[in-house]
Length: 229
Image 1 (cartoon, helix red, strand yellow):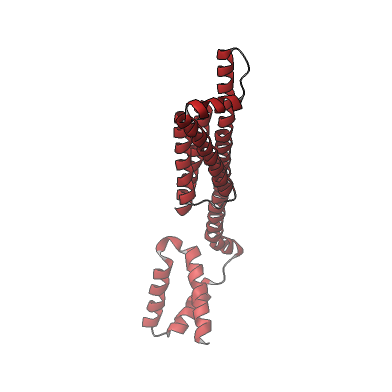
Image 2 (cartoon, rainbow, N blue to C red):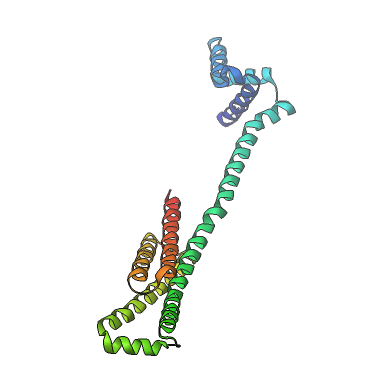
């Protein structure tokens, strides 16, 4: 009998011992009994063959018992994979939520300009007792208060630009191309949107837009950090 056949027989014998003598360290027990026969004058090959013949083939029930640990391990792996799969949809939704919040924040920031202008026109119209147009107000500001006019125009342009930048960041995140830099910029644009809405134009509506941008950027940073773990 070749050494390959003996090794195969030894492995089969070890499986038999694992099933029938599992609680008594089967490998050590097989090693001990093999050496015991060798001390009696048998060769290692003869000792393995003798032990194999003594034990006989595994029964069907023993074969099933031998497969049980493998089956359990496979089931555990499947459960672990299923748990990971269940988590994936939640994690995959975060870029969509973060991007949507950022986009909404950008739109709200842009619309805050129109809201502020409308509110200003209404207040001034009520004060003078007639309907006042935006052109009239801008004309007065340009002639009487040129510095205030410049700040008003700059404020509108800055808030509008910040809204556009939030839209770009939001669509980038929704396309799953977001990075730590984009997430950080989103937060910065949101903060600036709040500041310019308070100081220049935008008011409470602009503040809401900036806050949504900050929340979107924060969610992006959290999702990216989880992805790196």
